[in-house]
Image 1: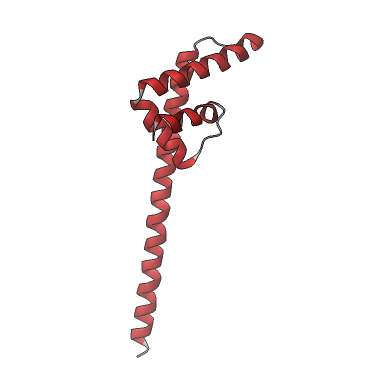
Image 2: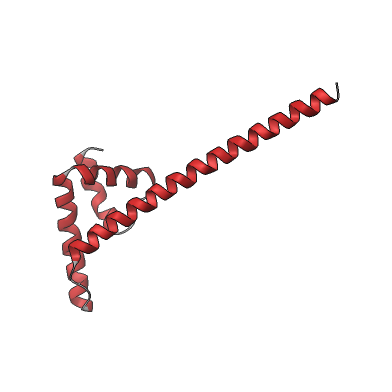
Length: 109
């Protein structure tokens, strides 16, 4: 992902509106690009600080952002694992069906 694309996704990420492949690529980019990370962190801190001033919430904004990134990364990895397992199961079911069709066809010949 390029920095220009990453900058477009910052607000979506902060508002939990970024999903799928875009989310995965965004997280990967943020982890290696300090410029985009700093831009995201600034946006996150401003948004959260304003909300927390109104609600008297926690002020460990950097820690909250790091937890959000970590949790999001875990969710993306979990989703990828589930997708891979589903593909393996579908392939296995297809192979079992093909085997059964070949066996039944050969049995009745």
